[in-house]
Amino acid sequence: MATDIPDFESFDQMADATAAGLVQMAAHQAFQLFRDKEFRRLVSFDILSQVEQDRIFNELVISYVVLIILVLEAPDLRVPSEFRDYLLALKEKIPRAHVNYLRSLGVEAEHLQNWEKLMDLRYEEYVKDRHEVRAAAMQLESSEKALDLDDLSKIQMLVPVQTVAIGCHTHVCRGESQGRDDLFKLTLKSLSKIYVNIRIRLEGGKITPLARAKVAWRQINRRKRGKK
Image: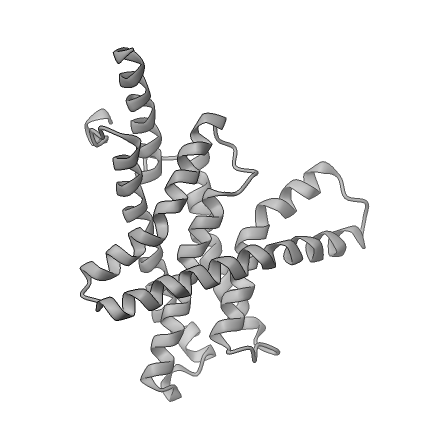
């Protein structure tokens, strides 16, 4: 409904609001997995120290936030070319939006700096790793049959979520991930939900914060053209 669309005056204002909504979604989904009984059983949660529990939660949150960034910059997103520039601008606002969200929760400034460093570190790590994940997936698929365009498209689509799931699993397990396939599958399943959700929103689905952003983006464009 038109009445549900915020009356943004600029792309920057719209991007700030959308980024805030996305990082809150990421934090919520990470908390859902963190509270999951099966997840806690698989990480032996009850025998972990508070520091280690907090570390695992932080890794989950970072993974969801970085996944959102990777979705926004995914080259295979089926969106209008002119909207892609907005998504890339939105991507740049995600880290700051997350820090602002943590600040609103009362996180102290010294810890906010650590969060910024960790986000940068994980983003750089997963951007690098996704090339290896893509290559491994292509090698696996091609061992069974010759790859066609549809196969390559599917591999490309799954690279972001698989990359983040592998990295998240490795960090949660402190590198000792061998034999912990059930934990990986649970983590991948949870990350896949938000990944698919965001892609649907971006590529055209039900009315959501991102869908509203697309409508607002069109409205701002029309207003700008009307002033010329």
